[in-house]
Length: 353
Ligand code: ASP
Image 1 (cartoon, rainbow, N blue to C red):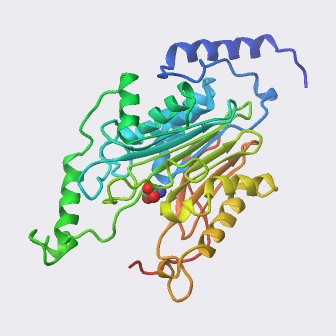
Image 2 (cartoon, rainbow, N blue to C red; image 1 turned 180 degrees about the horizontal axis):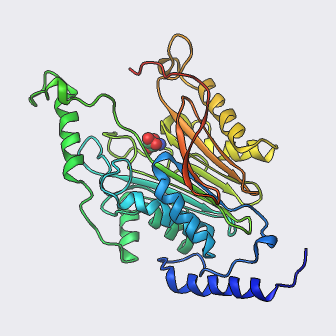
Image 3 (cartoon, rainbow, N blue to C red; image 1 turned 180 degrees about the vertical axis):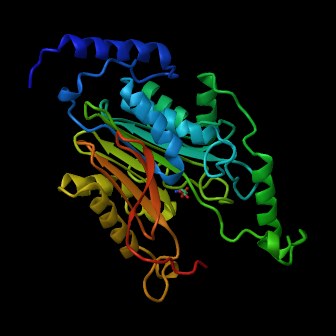
């Protein structure tokens, strides 16, 4: 392949670079955006995958990759859209609280090019834990900060402390509490207003740049009404997400406890290292999850009573996702931001208990 840029290619890439440095305002960037080489010299097909709530995230992150942004900067700016959205009650501001009515957030991320990782757990009062996880990654000799220390760290970097419990989230929590025990002193909420299921959710996002640089981030308010102090899989490097810049990245949403036991983010990347395509790697990890599930979590036919999903990209820009039951994921692979069907293991979930 020619190393010499045509005049047209040079002008085009410079224009993109200039636009990028002026248009992109990334707090604490891993590196400033830089001009993309001409397409003929791309090492990978750039791609962004995310959980199904990440349609706007994949659009934002992909746009940033096309402006020459760093892989992790793009992923974080993508998921921040959900963190800041009060209507997504599974992530960041507006997330459903723990059993005490307190919103506690978890996030972790990995940056392929620098081989770094960062995470925060049980963080209160800060809307964008993914960004705080990136700062742990960028500015400290540590990987994982939790609770009060994580909050103090964020405040030192000028994050604002805010009330994260929206009116909607408070109401859902009060309903949950009232219906918890028919014999307590809170009057039960009428049947018609009951929550059908205990809501779950999270956002994972994985990015591959045209240079083949890979990153991943997962951020969540965790299991709704969790025991205070509980952290799930999302902030655990190797479970909620994992990146190896030589191979690819993977992340997860769904029942965190089931993922932690198989180190699912790491395991999925290891399956890709052995040559599996991303969707197959995700399916293989889910089979391990089922194998390691306690009997109380399976029905009489061995089907899980919970859901779990994995999302993966490899260094070439191939991507895929798999779920225990039919489900979707978001992707931008250069055409448009869209939802696609994930591969799956079982047609229908067993009734949950
Ligand atoms: N994985 C998250 C957790 O266990 C929850 C979810 O994705 O629904 O905290």
